[in-house]
Length: 261
Length: 280
Image 1: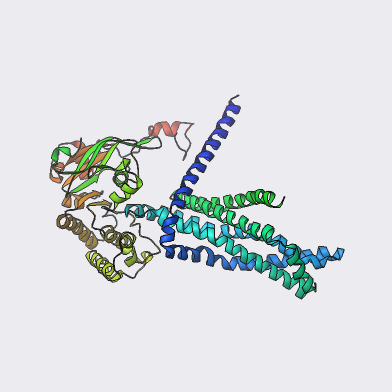
Image 2: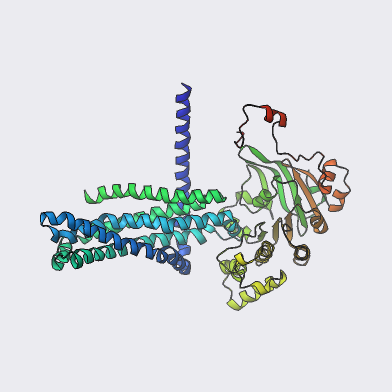
């Protein structure tokens, strides 16, 4: 009997902590959104963060997109050629990248590169009392530090995803048509006729915007609520990447079901 | 007990302050008044909540019971807008310096001005250089915080704290880890700032000699209460065993050295004792 009570107690504590954490994260988000006005009034802060969050993520996005597109094209060709359907390779590569791989892989890479950096930066600012000192200088750290980073993440990820898709498709073309000899006209024309701008491209970008919102929110919240020690910052950074990955994968299924069923 | 018996013009009024962290009670009914235009030192053994008290004066922590009034404003009841307005009149020197690591020394000091005012660049430059001259670091204006020693960071932080000419300055352990020359300069600077600008200063420190040399009033906190208060002279001459132990740094006396715990023999003989685990 006591084991059951203990189990209930553990579950109860977990549920209460989770709900409380969601509540705190929601309040945090509402404070960030209130900081939108400050971001608009001082675009230089946003531009600085766009560089740090977006531009510095370019290398990993370009590199990953190139190889993902190449592997996708190679494996697609190996499968399609048995059925004499290699002319559909362009459609396969494009739809895979636009609907699924582009938004999801970009978000996972973004959370590993930019999300973890945001968490560690904010966590260390907290641990070294930089955020507290700003408060004492009558500068709200959520509006001055957090909000520009949030909106930079929100803008950057969809742009990086578009780049991921474009580079992935082009590297798929290089492998499929230039190397393996799939007819160039079939590759591009089938892609053009089968890929729907509204149903595929726009939906892919909506997914990416949702992922950008969630990943940046998680990263900033974890950093802002990090325990102000080296272990606390380390744990927050790990949590940021793990929670972001789980949220992206879970939301991806949900959004895919809503968009493509 | 409080400083209220020795004051005329009160700047900060603290009444029946209670605050806890987890199960540990930090303040259990602290009441004290801090006079305007004077240097008041808050002293006491480590872990008695001196820094916590400063955080409450700045509205960064909320008391669980009681009130903290600064210039007649109940800090805990202020909304965000009014709290930030009140903070513009405060300066705080953090123990760690708390400089913004991505900004140079110059930009760190200019930061509060750039955030709150639309001054011309030449005016910002003049203000910053004057404050840097005051703390002896004009030559270091282009350095980054990582290139400064701990003492230099504290001096830059002091320059930043006074850049908006606050009416209340809070110093959290300003004398820790400074070389003798810098220490003497900082002590003089705090005194001069107080006298020339009429700033109300609240100073948290362990350093008896330096603090007693500049403080007008001293409050000693321990076990969540104000244990003694008065001018440095009064405390030096106090008959209280507690005060004498503190000011003379005697190892034995009423002030507990040990954190509250079971008896050593109980812990050594107990089979239930689990090393490194929380008691509660």
